[in-house]
Amino acid sequence: MKSNLTAEKNRYRLYGEKPYSVAVLHGGPGTPGSMGYLAKTLSDQFGVVEPFQTARSIAGQIEELHSVIQSVSAAAAVKLVGHSWGAWLAFIFTAQYPSLVAKLILIGAGSFDEEHNSDVRRIRLDRLDREERAEMLRLGSALNDTTPDDSTRAVFRSFGELMSKADSYDCLEVDDAPIDFQPGVYRSVWPEAERLRHNGSLLDLASSIACPVVAIHGDYDPHPAAGVRDPLAQKLRDFRFVLLDKCGHYPWKEKHARDDFFRIIRKELSERGA
Image 1 (cartoon, rainbow, N blue to C red):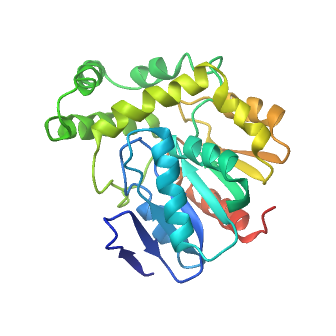
Image 2: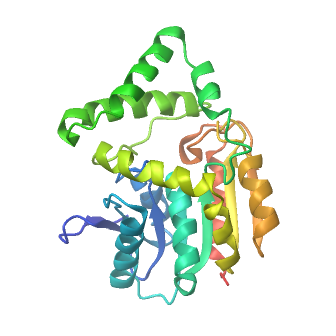
Image 3: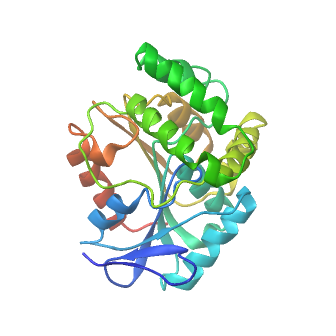
């Protein structure tokens, strides 16, 4: 499997061979490179581009993604795979550029409405011991500090490690660590994304999406499955939801679910889109 980091200001990585018909979007926001393991694994069958989103606004990240897809992919439309925040970004991008997306695959997406989102923080804290809960609360407060990225990068990394522990059911060790931690990107983009969900604008974008959409979700993911399945089933024209047993937020490394996950995603990427 070939992987190469481009020289264009490190905007993306390429895996496999042309044509690069699959794009995988990382979560965070602010954790570029965290889809590397998934991209590498899929590159024995598909050409994959892993864009890095570094802009400090949703509009900026959409345009970064548009530029990468236009410059890298020779396909008329790509299969777009997004994880966590990347699932929302992929959803927003598909609504804005429907002709560029043949199929949309959402992995571990956050709830698309406020109704189902209220317990996520409590679920995560309940899965940690007392010391870890105190540390997560301390790190979360420190992360909101507006000091430069260099001063809070270690905080963001430690916060992410605790979040991953709370979000996982029984994970294997795989090399999917981000190549960078960008707390400033997180602090800027995530509140904007939450406002879109709060005012209903995020879900309203479904009316502009015509391609097939598949959501893959773990039953142990603290983001409730109903918060993805129910709103999207009501709004999208072509939607399918897959729930994986004994699976948390990162299905590609979950011991009990990864085989099913890879079987499903390979099948979805092999099928024709819209």
